[in-house]
Image (cartoon, rainbow, N blue to C red; front, top):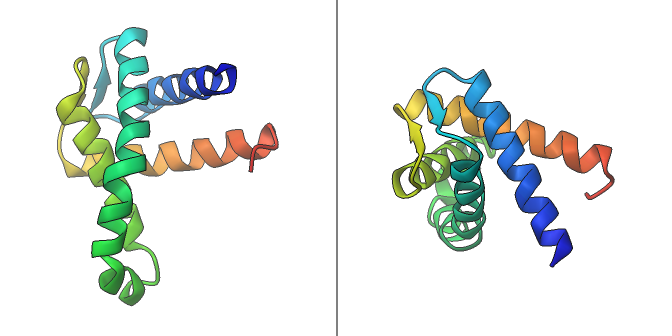
Length: 114
């Protein structure tokens, strides 16, 4: 349970960083960031695998680059259903998802979680 809460807090902090770095991504505060982090976890656990499966042909053709589009759509979906977070279009969703992915990789590498 503690590991889950730590992961949730780190994801919320990374979402706040993304909101500060990417124009067009807005989060009202830490409460909204925590809710968005929780929703993002649910979306990545339920919706993203279905999307990845359905887009296998185009993912293969693009050598995996289409997964960046899938990640952007997941962030956009989270913003659509989470209170206090707004993503103003696909461009900010794409850059926000890319930055969030890079930051997650860095955090995992630094703390040896991956």
